[in-house]
Image (tube, rainbow, N blue to C red):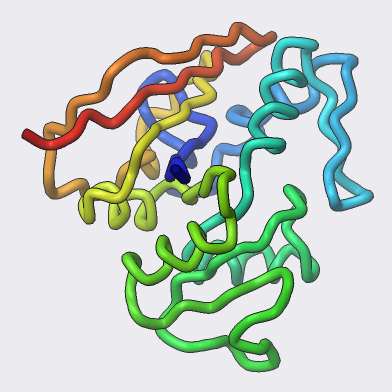
Length: 200
């Protein structure tokens, strides 16, 4: 059965980005603080992490068969130049297909009829692998729809003091999680995984 998971690098006070200017320079230092290289599908992007984080990234990438993201992230990244760095198909939740793009190709599928249809399409693409969901608004929609199985957090030792939470404006709190089901201690980061507890 396909697992639907969300994950993000998060500050100790619970934010995946600073509200004003991103704050990513503090959140993402662990991607470049080691000597073990993890290449991506983007030839200009190679992570250099601790050995523990490199193993974690490799295992996560091997288990992921598709991603679900929002239109805002797609636009900010300019479609990752045509292919996501994880080298898996991306389902983009949007109100309309962006100009110049086909509704579906080997890299991107644009779904215009809701989060449930987006998750279903991503599961079909992923097969027996996992579906990764972008944090923030999309993750909130997925968990509120009862479609999220796991939450992964790359916890870094920084306090941002405000910003964008992993689950933005969650309307069904509290949501109970089991775990952690996995703990990996990297350099400057602790990788955590939790299972979303079934309702009832």
